[in-house]
Image 1 (cartoon, one colour):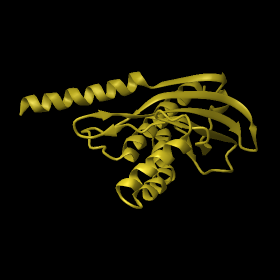
Image 2: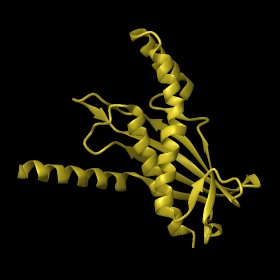
Image 3: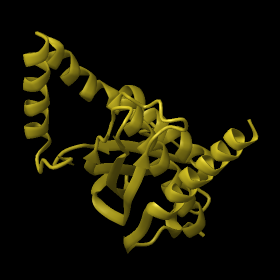
Image 4: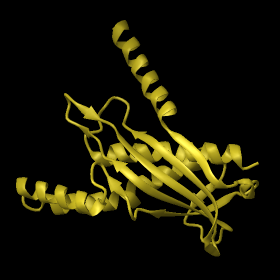
Length: 200
């Protein structure tokens, strides 16, 4: 019993450690001082030009997965495609916002009256897999842009958020949406902490 408990603690430690080490947040241009004292940020999401796994174009990935699932069971691929897109609004974005809000001290959401807007653009998604005997964690890379809500073409700052790992403690993340959701949680948390630190 003691051995099992110690192994679980060590497993949790390594998951947390790997998450902390793997993720990279960098300010690529501009500065974040304009966010000092800001309490609210409008947020928008961009999935255009996103690569997925070994596919440079998300459309090619969706086409292949949809065909494969439909060959196994009629209609399964169509259902999968709907879920793949719906997960963004239903799972990924709420998870990102929840963790960003907790760590940044700034509330993000559909706040079109806010002076500034955060645009989070996902540039790469690794869905990963979990088949009991073997697994690969999900991960995402993204770019965060701070713009004036009234003048979105003017980029005030650009931040890269790379290698955000996604997996659940215990390994019960057999659904790709669950794994990717955790990657957005890591992204939101890391970006929120970074902005809180730099916006002084």
